[in-house]
Image (tube, rainbow, N blue to C red; front, side):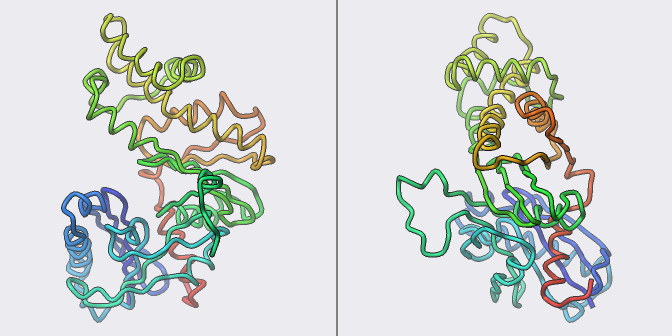
Length: 335
């Protein structure tokens, strides 16, 4: 007998076939996520893509639907444009919390079976009144919480150590992990801002269309621009370099990424001086070249005794999958 686990984000879904003992048998992926649902106005496109992944795994391994014990999903699946809306679980969050708060949804159009949806995380507590005085302390994630559980389960973050996981993406999230649990979150509007600038402003035509490797001198130039001039003037400075013809698109791109990432790491530095004091382990999880900017800035802005580790999520195991296996353990499955 087998489990199928799917981790679905804004634009990509990864699906895994596992034996009942947790052994990975097969995997596949599809370029479909909640972005596609939001654009179409219906989650049918997402469900269709996930259903296709499901059937590919069955076909490739000569299995019947009756061979699948359960189907589990995490990430953006509990978003309004996901599989079914389910509220976030409040911090602190560990594998047991995610196992205990799983939302079961009967999906009747494609799968025609119960789907077990793993909730995202939030800093708001049950019954807490949220208003303008505390909204800055309210943060949410969908997908990063199970990756954090996976990092702890795999030993990358020792269960007794304090650490911050940095997850760059459409929203760059900072997750504070203590005692093996996510206890605080800080979310930043990074990838969304970058996309808007690239697609809706003149600066978009002045940056490289291809991935660019980050060099320290240009990332740090972005930092100094941000510190000296603020974000809006910094963007004008980058634009001016094109008008005056003094830099290449590749160099402009590195400075631009430095500006965006600096706003996040400066915030992290402040938190580590105050409410997150004592943290000495930073884990940066991502696979795109521009994420190197976060590592460069951590080494420049954080105390020298802080250990910074950068993990390429495209080259290593799926930490979300590792987190899922921990959830199964807390559901009584021997894996």
